[in-house]
Image (cartoon, rainbow, N blue to C red; front, side):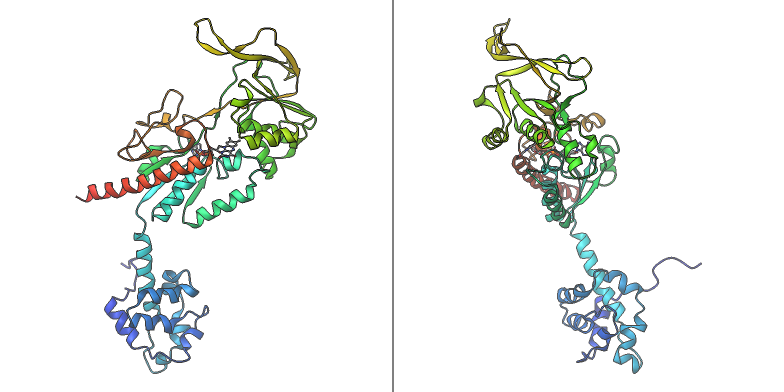
Length: 443
Ligand code: FAD
């Protein structure tokens, strides 16, 4: 019975050199003019004669990106081989087989270059850093991202006026050009589990899933329409700005009076974004005093300059409806001993007031989702849900062998540069882990 095995066998090195030796090295190579993409055929054949295969591949790559395929399916006898001067005298040069000899060799070299497969979960700065470094080191890194567009907080949190989406997209394109694959719309822990990733042949995994779960205020009235979480609010506005959502989807309307709770960078982004949507007034309330606010000086000053009003040592006691947010009962706060004698920030009697408002945006912190750790075994978290990692034997390895983590998912939300710094250290550790594991298994 006829088989599907590839019919023609490739040249051995000896055969290839013998065939290349027959080339007349024509001054005006008819083989090149017979090739629709004008491959530098004479030159690569001469390079084979000289056993300079790197040079030969270079000549091929100058004109072709699919040499493995062309060598097999091009109608050579009607093109380069048919045009070869020797074919008029009987036996033309087997250009297709010489091209195949080189192309197959190069393909093997490029594929062997892959040191292994690593799954990177999350496409924020931590995940992108790990994937880019591993790709440069010769690994096949695939990023699995829950959202439909990669970038993490860079894309969905930080507003357009500080970091344009176009710049984030271009930066991600550079990472992709290193050979990193990004698969969006994959929620690890829901669409696929960590265990399934290992079954698919990934030899290590990196968790860089950040802190996507907003902390609640725990004040009466928090569930009223008009009380928003800052990270969801910012993501919605980012999606409106990039055209993925309509303007009517905005949770905030021009003319709204807005209270933002918290004075970290997320709160400032929410306050300044509200002004850009047309809020008639924006006040930021923070339980800390001005000197202990968590936002940067630059963000604070720019917010003041744009008209945001700050109320320090102040917080919300109750959100007042009844049908939607209409006002907030607020109070001054100061350090004082509680009933057990511990000094805490407590409401100051007699400072209560009611502030009329239409929207309240809560920006008092985030924590990690438990989707991954709850659907697999062996990955421990601390009491607040942050993934526990170790410094040794491999920096950033979790309590499960082969699974690493870095970025906000292992500590309180911090900064882009810290996620990148940790990402680099962990990528180096993954490289060492996989190399040592390879050595152990080959002993
Ligand atoms: P993230 O950026 O949060 O990325 C995590 C990614 O993982 C997300 O894309 C998420 O969709 C994905 N993911 C989550 N779960 C899963 C899952 N189960 N499967 C697949 N994918 C998943 N820092 C600065 O240095 N400068 C700033 O100006 C600044 N501004 C900020 C403004 C805002 C509004 C916010 C929220 C943060 C800001 N930060 C800033 C902090 C900084 O952005 C974070 O510290 C940093 O993005 C953390 O990076 P990461 O990669 O750990 O996580």
